[in-house]
Image (cartoon, rainbow, N blue to C red; front, side):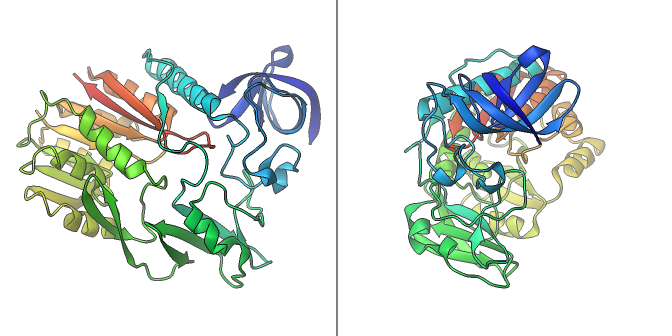
Length: 394
């Protein structure tokens, strides 16, 4: 490790990195933000850039505060800082500003699209107590804890500030689980569930948009306690009613247990919509969750293969509304090209990564689609993550 002194942080980059540019070389510094001057330990160095951990604060940015998780603050050794709250040292208003800046810069750089620079909005209480699902790992001590950033080091912690009050009150992180490897703690509307290692999953029920959604306790559901409701409403609001045809070949791609498909079907109970999902159990749950819509169905398939097969078989999506919520890496070139080749009327794209979103917007633009509207929500306060929902139209 090489210690570099007095790095002046001048910008922030996607992933939570502070950016310094001494003598023409770019330093990406974890734990630092614009306005900081820090000393940093370099853990990766290339000819044109380096990555480092801030280890000492020489001068504090006006946007800095004491970390909400003292165990993760700059005065602790990087290898001992619990991960999961990499924006915890930033005042809430600045978190929103940085995230909005990163979204705007991503859209400009990767899609050539100019958007407002204040789009990311807070949802509910902005700071702590929002996380309904926490994954902890068990080490030799038997106590479950989070990993340190970028490592498999398990950190024993006294608190979980992002987790809901109900999760913290259980003090699961202070109990011994010898022999276990991974524990998921779930606040299921006030009832605490534990999933230890690969135990047989049980069914839980969540709520959004006035509907009940059943899912496996080890399955995917939005972690912020207001996220599912927020995204359900956002998808419904972003659909252009003048382009929406309930009888068209509407789809929910990467459909999970049917949350986004339900948001579409909610506009008209007679809506025809197909949810496409690769996870067998999620498909089964989606079929049940969408039973309120008689023309909804759930299909088990990988989205990329499903679209290619549909296109190869002469399928068309004329007049269709497509909702898609791909994984963090995005849908990718082939998927976007196959989708847009079938000419849906509108695509509602839910994204948890701004760069992946921007790249997929660019792929869609090659087929004539344009970004018509975009909204963004801070559904991961005190982290660098956020969600954006965009509408693409011809």
